[in-house]
Amino acid sequence: MNARAGVPLPVTTAADSRAVTSSTLIEMQDVALTYGSGPTAVVAVHGATCQVPTGARLAITGPSGSGKSTLLHLMAGLERPTAGRMSWPALGEDPLGRPGLVGVVFQGPSLIPTLDVVENVALPLVLAGTADRDAHELAMNALETLEIDDLAGKLPDELSGGQAQRVAIARAMATRPVLILADEPTGQLDRATGAHVIDVLLGAADLLGAAVVISTHDPAVSDRLSTRWRIRDGVLSTADPSTPNNDRGVTR
Image (cartoon, rainbow, N blue to C red; front, side, top):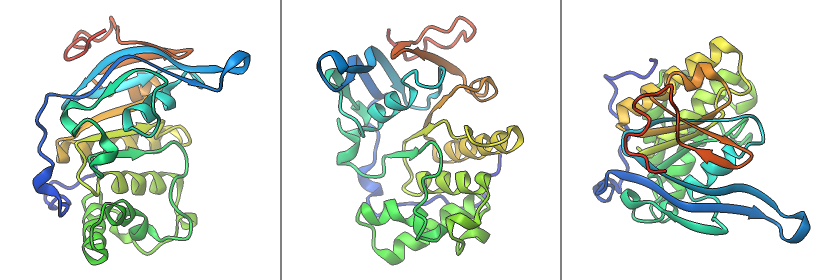
């Protein structure tokens, strides 16, 4: 784990409104998402039913194109279902209505190329209404926690792939989320660098007390998490016989 327990965690100005009042972060009931209509319609997710509890360490596995990214986007509130019901009992029913409660690490490069590292990390804080000076301080705090504050003044094209993903994790944790969603965070990294990025991600979640959901097709990543679900052709299965604790907090 690369995150330093001795460094204070970032705290936003809205910290007093962030109390989690339910043990369920996400609940999906027969959720489906279809793109388009008629004969060209594509069903990306078919009737998914599940719960994500607080403190989850969850891997969503499946091959490329199986619907993993779409499912994570639904969980983050970035996509709206075309059928079924989504709710976030612990997050006030809609994560977009309470900025910063959900941190997202996107698949592939996601840093804004014209902003330096600290500006990239500060961006979600600024968008959530934090004053620029406070956002900069909190962004530096997140970078220090992950021991990458030496990268603060660099532009994204000056970073290695592993450094860029660690910066993306710092950006996701800067608002002190209660849920971190990571979409194939090691998909473009070599095995050693990917393992280190997962160390950093899980270490950051442990420091924050946040739940983690990671989509991946890599068993080396999914084996690091206590619960594993599988999605194939848009159909989600929460059954995993190889993980005895899988059914804890999950409905099918």
